[in-house]
Length: 255
Ligand code: NAD
Image (cartoon, rainbow, N blue to C red; front, top):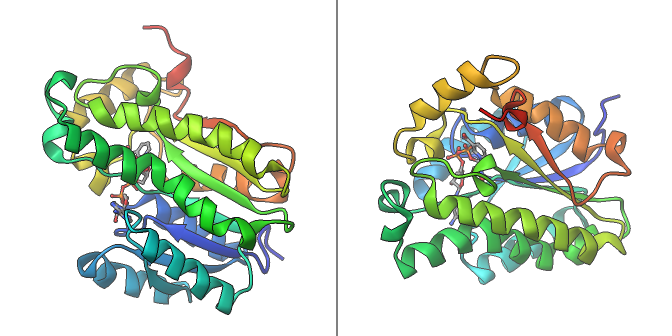
């Protein structure tokens, strides 16, 4: 019996086999969970469908900028499962132009889009999911980055969005705590994925972490997934409102 035997899990954010969300989906499947993976747009759907089939997961569309698509997703889940035990939010987006140069170049539109997709969407999803998650020791988990707290070159508006996401995690933990729902985030170290490719100079961040992190290396998607398993299983039944670092210890260093 796996740690997540029989659990109904919704995963938002699988784009390809390098996605953090995919490592989580695979591990949760191996631990006995039943999964639904979402996709935004036809191009992503084409990549997600075969991955989903390989772990006997179902797929459904959900562009998180659309309240309508979120509502449709939740009513389809209600019909299919009657509830949600775990919701994984592994979604972020900012225009490439916003992820280079100075924060002073941030546009109003670019700011709104980054904050909408990368932070507000977590609230929007949980608002609709609340009736499906209440009273079943459910868990929601979001993905953050240390750029929420410290300045990294070119991360710019995404750092602001991650700060909003981490604050949302704390407020949502209180907002959903009465229903027994736990809400946490993982602050993952840098990993080469599609989203990371949008950040100018990302390789420089990778090599700095390798040099300075206590473990003298970068982390893997699988390591994020293992911590996600802890946070989403009964092992973390007393943990909510927490931002948990999976970064080879990089955040404790001063230089
Ligand atoms: P990824 O590109 O594989 O995943 C990002 C996902 O966001 C994609 O599946 C994409 O389809 C989805 N997405 C974007 N806009 C969307 C929308 N409007 N509606 C629905 N989905 C949308 O990259 P990843 O690195 O696995 O990113 C997953 C999460 O982890 C993100 O929140 C990211 O900020 C976070 N994170 C990544 C790193 C890293 O270095 N890769 C580090 C810390 C945190």
